[in-house]
Amino acid sequence: MRFANLDNFWLLVLLPFLAAFFAHALWSRRRALARFARNPLAEKLTRNLSRGRQVGKCVLLGLGTFFAILALTGPQFGTQLEMAQRKGVDVMLVLDVSRSMQAEDVKPSRLARAKYQIRSLLDLLRGDRVGLVVFAGRAFVQCPLTTDYGAVEMFLNVLDAGAVPVQGTAIGDAVRLAVRSFEEGEGQHKAIVLFTDGEDHVGQPLAEALVAAEQGVRIFAVGLGTPDGELIPTEEEGGGVSFHKDQRGQYVKTRLDESTLQDMALETGGDYFRSTLRGAELAALYDQIAEMDQREIGSTRLTRYQERFQWPLLLALCCFLAEAFLGDARVQTREWKGRFA
Image (cartoon, rainbow, N blue to C red; front, side):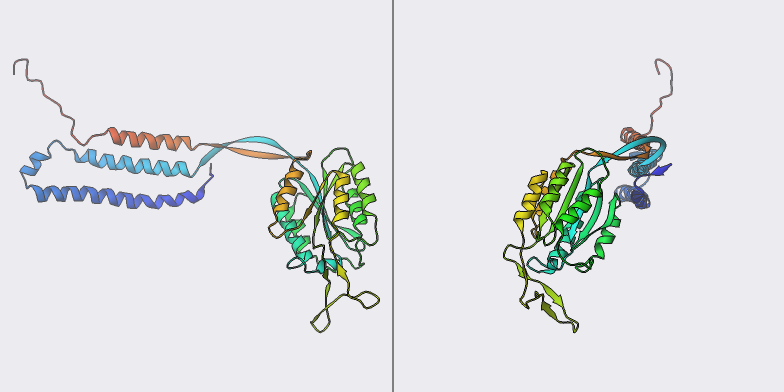
C-alpha cells in the first residue's frame, strides 16, 4: 500500500485541536446551563438530553474528519502493468560558436543569447530526442541524439566561443554533420534547429540544405544579431577588451545574414526566426516541430497503482450523515400498563 499525497498527512494535527474544541463546547454548554438554573430544576430541564449521544456526535465528527484526511492522502494498493509507447521528433540543435558570436549587438552576447534560448527550447520539448552539434571553422557532434536533456545542458554549459579551435563559420559542414547524425530511414520526423548569425565563410550552406531536404530533414533557423552589425570584442592578456581586426589591421564588423538562413529554411520546408529578447519565436518554433510526423522512440513499462481513496471517503460521508441524523434526546420507551391505565 502507498499514498500518492503524503504531504496531506500533516492535516492529522488538526484532530487534537478538534477534540479540544468539542470538549470545550460540551463544558461551555454545561456551564451555561448551571448559570441559568440550579438543581433540581436543571435536571428537569435536561432530563430528555443524552450526554452519551452528545459525546457520540462529537466522536462521529472526529472519525469523519479522520477518514476525510485519509482520503486526501490518496491511498493506493493493487497494481496494473501497462506498456506506454514513446513517440517524438529527432531534433539536432546546431550552435555557432565562432568568434563572431561574441558580438554584443544582442545582449549579453549572441552566444549567451543562443545558449539561453536553447535551454528554453529544451523546456518546451517533451519526449523528443535531442542532439547538439557545434561549429566554427569545423563542426563537431557535442552530444548525440538522446532523451536525456540534462546531458545536453551539461555540454551546453561548458561551451564558449573558443570551443572549436579552427575559426570561421562553416554552416554547410555543420548541416551536413547534423544530417548524418540522424538514423537512416524515411519519415518526416527529423529537424535541425540552427542558431547562428548566418555569416558563412568556408562552406556551401544552400547546397547542404538541398541535400537535407532530399532526406526529409527540415531546417529551422534562429538568427542572432542585427543587420547593422557590431564589432567583435576580444580579451587581451592584461584583462582589457579590444576588438578583432583583419590582416590589414582594420576592425571587423559582423552582421546578421538573414537572407542565407531564410533560403535554407525555405528549401527544406522549415522556417526562419530572428532572435528577440521576449523569446516569442521559440513558441512558434516549437509549434511547428510539434506538428511534424512523430516516430516511435521506444516503449516504457509502467506500473499503475489502483486508487482506493473512495473507501475512506465513503466512511467519512457515513460518519457525517450518522452525526446529522443522530439527535441529542434520549430514546423514550413507555411501559405497557394495560389498555385502560
